[in-house]
Length: 162
Image 1 (cartoon, rainbow, N blue to C red):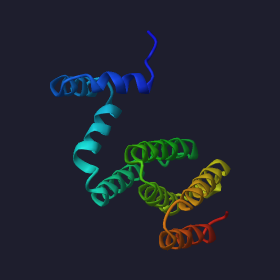
Image 2: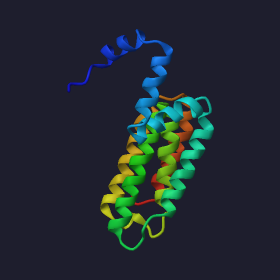
Image 3: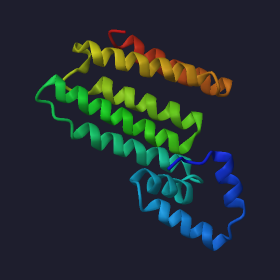
């Protein structure tokens, strides 16, 4: 089966009644956890962005506390998974400020993790790439926020091996 384009789906959805749209949304939410998470964000948390950011930060804290520290292999796998989940939550929001805030928080948690992850080249590179992407995203924000987040990036850079 070939999937329809977004414009075709949009045209078809405009022709549906509100009750049919409700049924389609509920049916869509049954298939994938990400669909359900996105609907939850859009319905309950999109209007309260600061509380959404704090709940994602709590999730990041929880995931960092559950890392298996027995070897750098497991630490590296866990940190990549945490970053993947963080980026998924960022995709739900689509706001640049949320993206910068969450990625900076991820970097802070990564920096303060024990045992230090910077003895591993792959983790140093992951940290550097994440800070680089934050730096690129900052350019789209207001000047005041650019300055504040730029200082936060510099602070993270100077305290590490990068």
